[in-house]
Image 1 (cartoon, rainbow, N blue to C red):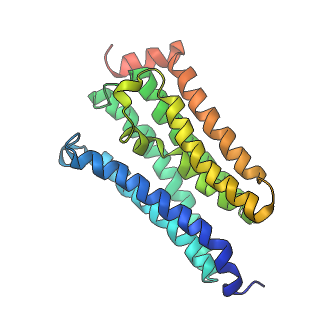
Image 2: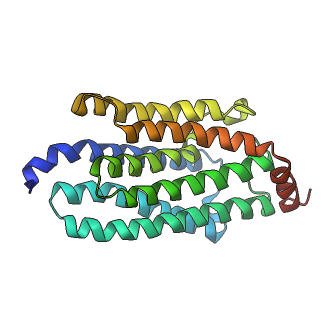
Image 3: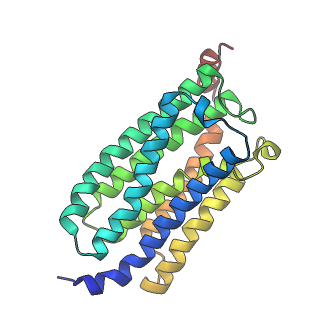
Length: 236
């Protein structure tokens, strides 16, 4: 059995990745509110609920490698199951928030209704699916770590949307968003090269999913059924 001292160097990278992703996401939302682009107090309760759930996820993302570094695997496993349930809640809230935002016309003006519908639905489903893939691969630590980080990379988009000049990117925002996400994946790839001598298959899978998610969102936004549903939700 590995000692705590032996585990710490292996977990330090994942701790730092989790902290970095959490700080980036929080900063993206905080600066947007502080610049006066949104009134948090005017947001419906389900938006706040979604925000609380996301903060809980980011906290858990940081806590989990910390527990492994301290050799507290029983608590790590128990919190892992809670994290799996939380991911389903986040996915459900993400889809609901997207639908409700269309009905109330509270979505960003630089997104068309079909695009926003595809965006919130696909990203939420991809996040939930990746987390549960990670849970199923929990015995394979290398896959588990990378898929958990990968799931969080997928949901970087809302923070990126508050940092990038989105009104200037109407119609092609998926490209810069994907590039930013792939930059984060490349950090994991460099870690793979340094520690494993090769890029781990899970890292390649995350990169492929990032690209697939962006392409799926774009293509679905052009699909007649999605356009029709978005029109019904927004009353035309």
